[in-house]
Structure formats: structure tokens, C-alpha cells
Image 1 (spheres, chains in turn green, blue):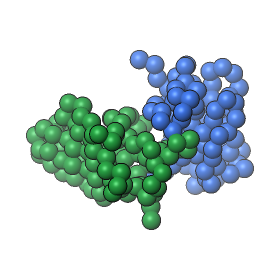
Image 2 (cartoon, one colour):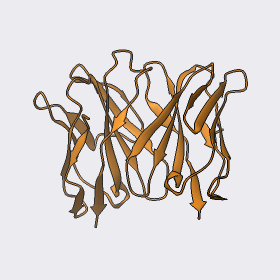
Image 3 (tube, chains in turn purple, red):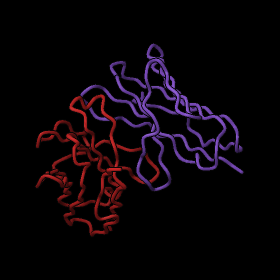
Image 4 (cartoon, helix red, strand yellow):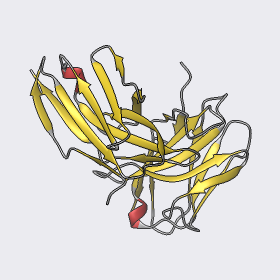
Length: 109
Length: 116
């Protein structure tokens, strides 16, 4: 079983749509969780950390379900500039980041 | 806003040659990392570095690879004898937290390595 799995994508949505990304992780000892976005041929950039209580940053909402080992990201009112690959990243204390394969999003005019 | 920088942006080399990829982490950060991303594939961890020594490495990071922090600012990745399959984007990252498991990592723009 892969360490971090994500929706295979791509997602093609119209501007203004709400889109949800799902991620599961296999290591129950994982302790920190992040969503990064990556534009084509660019570096990953932190979108948001994910906390147990869930957190929101503007149009973006992240949720964590430790029991199910599941993380989600919701984007509301999607913009053209949201087009990117969204990476789920999981970390066990004192160890390296493990990246998911990413889900590509294209927001269409 | 402070950022991680990497040089060169693109390196082309012949198979069997040595390459050194350079990174300048964010100045107050304590943990440093190298990752690679083969075109079309996921980001893969190579090595983490703390307090002037390797703290963790992946199975990709074999004897052909080494890292060094030669001075107070640079962090380098050396590949001794490059292979075709080393062609990838190499990202450097840094994190400020002593508790690396909690720290957010900030990535540099990457060096695209092409091995011919």
C-alpha cells in the first residue's frame, strides 16, 4: 500500500465551482499534515497546514480525520489562478516529508 | 520575505560526470533537505541534514550522493558519477523548527538536472 494516496485527477472545473480533494495515508504514527500546491515545473509551495480541528483560510478548508487516516481540501469559488497540482504531504515526527502523487486541477473560464 | 535559493537553475552534464547542486536555505532555519522529482512523478525525499550531519536519508540516497554545509550559508548536494536516471528536478528545502516533525518546509525553485 502506498504511503500517501490522492485522487488521481485531473479535475476540470468551471470558475466558481467548489472542488474537493481527498488524501489517505498509511502510517498511523503520522503527526503533521500539509497541503502544498505545485505549478507546472515549479517548486511546491505551502498552501496550508492541516490541524485536527480542521482549519480554514479564505476559500480553502482543510479537514483531518485521524481515525480514518484521511485528509481533505475544499476549494470554494474556484479561480483560474487555482489551477495547479495539489500535493498532500504527511510527516512522522523526526522523519522526512512524504508526498502524495498530487491531483491536478484545471479551472476553466 | 526570506526564501530558499538554488543554483544553477538548469545543469546539463554527461553521464559519469560529477555535479554539485547548491542551495542557500533561509538564514535562521536549522533543518535542510534535498528532494527530487522526476518529470511527471511525485516529489521524493533524498536526505535531511541537521547540526552538520545527516539525520535521515532514503534508499535513493546511495553512495553516489553526498551533502555538505561548507560554510554558514550554503548547503550542497553532490552526485559523484551521474547516471541517466538521475535526470530530475532537485529541490532544496529548509525548516526552522527544532522539532522537525512539526516544521513547515520551504522549498527552493529547484535545479533541473539533465544527464546526457
